[in-house]
Length: 240
Image 1 (cartoon, helix red, strand yellow):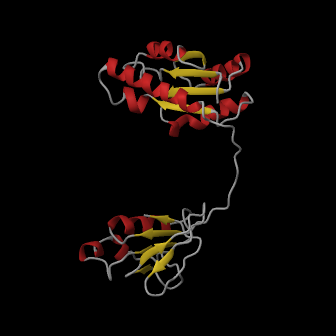
Image 2: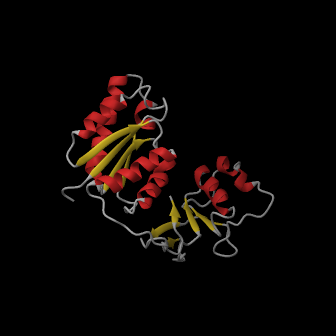
């Protein structure tokens, strides 16, 4: 989209970011980039005053895109999306740049960390131009899981996925005739209480079995087993 009106917000995160990254330099850099209407910094952007700053700027400056350079999106992306919604801006017109975990926490040279932060912010501004308004939808999810591979990782995943509530059923399939001696020392073989690794009914796991194909339908894969029986486990997503 051309002629965006983007607001850029650089979080100091107390001293978590500001002790290494020159946030004022990043703000000055961002302010000179195309489509950027304003660039600000605040000590804690995730705080109520920080969110109110974004909301007010959206309304007063008619922003249609927002970039927040702060911590990991896993921590506060929903927080900032809520701020956009409260200002009647589509929540998906937001892009975050992680300058805490990817800059200040992994670099000791302030100059290098600041330059990297500028690059991440620039990339976020370029990317948010391409964002479009989206609507949230709900889809029916299949809780069944197919774990491909009978090694330590496969058995561990099958045991964990068999515990409620992550999955109603978990099936493990591997190509070898049996598990190795080393693998047999895994708790999978010494569990006292019954597991729920029993789909199809009566079978906890399938040896000599590979996955021939899988239908890439969203939220409901239909893998076909190649074990001489050509079984089809419909509705089973896979965890490779």
